Length: 124
Image 1 (cartoon, rainbow, N blue to C red):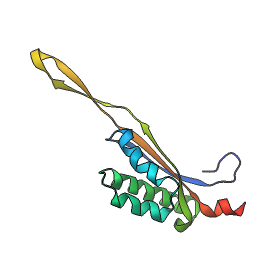
Image 2 (cartoon, rainbow, N blue to C red; image 1 turned 60 degrees about the vertical axis):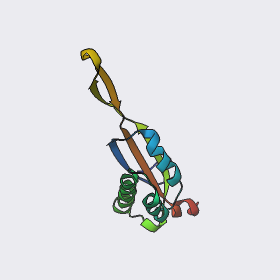
Image 3 (spheres, rainbow, N blue to C red; image 1 turned 90 degrees about the vertical axis):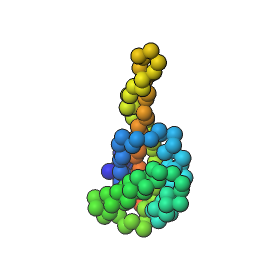
Image 4 (cartoon, helix red, strand yellow; image 1 turned 120 degrees about the vertical axis):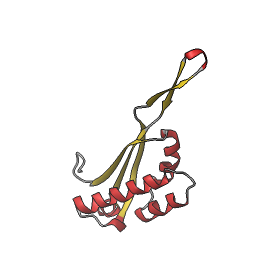
């Protein structure tokens, strides 16, 4: 995807409806922002969070999109942007005393990972 000034090529991958709160996923993505492709693949493996595997799958998908769609080399990629936004909540009810129902909101979120090539930055 080219930006308005046609100078940068950005490949992205999106994950939707991850069944975890956005706050918990931001712990992972904040550490990955600005890392090279190789670093970004290794870092989630050593994090003690369950969703690290899904984030590493998104990184692989963004790199594959950059390679397939734009012909960029994976070794020159870095994570330029990693966004985590809230999505719709699953609404459930828990039974309570005297026949009442207590609402439970289970959060979901969506993740966008964008990768750029480092060669584009050095050519200017």
